[in-house]
Amino acid sequence: MAVAAEAAKLKAAGVSLMDFGAGEPHFPTPRHIKDAAIAAIEANFTRYTVVPGIPELRKAIVERHACDFGSDYAVDETVFTSGEKLALFNAIQVLVEHGDEVILPVPYWVSFKDIIQYAGGTVVYLETEEAESFRITAEAIERLITPKTKAIILNSPSNPAGNVIDEADLERIVHVAHERGIYLILDECYVYLNYESKPVSAGKFAWAKEHMIVLGSLSKTYAMTGWRAGYALGPKKVVANLSKLQSQSTSNATSFVQKGALAALAGSQQCVEEFRAEFKLLRDYIIDALKTIPEVTCTVPAGAFYVYPNVSAYIGRGGINSATELATRLLHEGHVVAVPGEAFGTSHHIRLSYPVTRETIDEGVRRMKSFLLGL
Ligand SMILES: Cc1ncc(COP(=O)(O)O)c(C=O)c1O
Image (cartoon, rainbow, N blue to C red; front, side, top):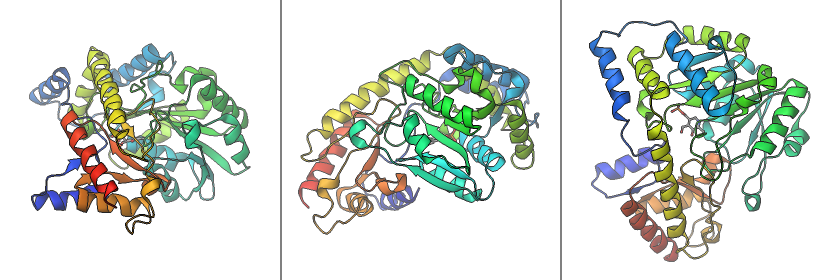
């Protein structure tokens, strides 16, 4: 957000920027989803609804999840929220008490850390190895568990590095958490954007349902970031508390957004496949482009829509001492928007969000190269 604010100032001053900052698809929301919401407005579906979402939408959430991932949730085990971020925020408020520890793999999406801390929780960082594609294992998690561990957060595919936890590792982690009565909070925002293997959700391990909160988002899957549409799936008791908390903040998510979400989840899934296919091509395109910059290395992300190149070779040159300084100067001097790794808990990277045109990738990487080589 800080980068976006700086970039907006430059744009307003007339500077042409190559923008890899925003974490959102560049596609418009599919026609059938827009039509459903427009029809809902025209039909005056514009009043309060029940807090956890209209019953047909909750049914569509659990049916889509069961169909795609083999999970087994009942309608009263899901709540629809104004964006997945709210489901995450509420889940942490409900589960985490002052002094509780929450295990968080690095690199992490920044909101995880801030939301845990806002709830009074202590973040316990799980360091990963870039050489192992930031792999997260049950053994590494086990080593960090203490009597105060309340929850573990997993985000696969991940923002920012695009690493994916494979099914075998995921099952072992679910075992570890379930056996110890620790909650697993699974952020599945990018679950459909998996380029190397069949998407997997921890929700399929129904035997561990008691200790899992699965969070889903329509933002990236259906190009609906501005609509604010997400959900949580979890044990009935926890979901009832999420709904109770929501009843004292947003109440229901916007009525006609719920109708759009229903069309997205219950309608044709062809758009999801088309988006995925295009993102995979863009991933390969940007990875190839980055290879033209000497001494920049980049793990090939297996999912999501970010690349997380390692720029450490350039830190220490031209008066630059951190990824934040590098991203700031890249913005002001190279006119390229990237997010520094410090925002995600690492100091040698920048994050580029690649749902952009191929022309933006070409020009953006050309500018980055010329800026870095000039240091
Ligand atoms: C890992 C992760 N989780 C959750 C979200 C938020 O999703 P939503 O738009 O549904 O609130 C984002 C958005 O960038 C994200 O990257």
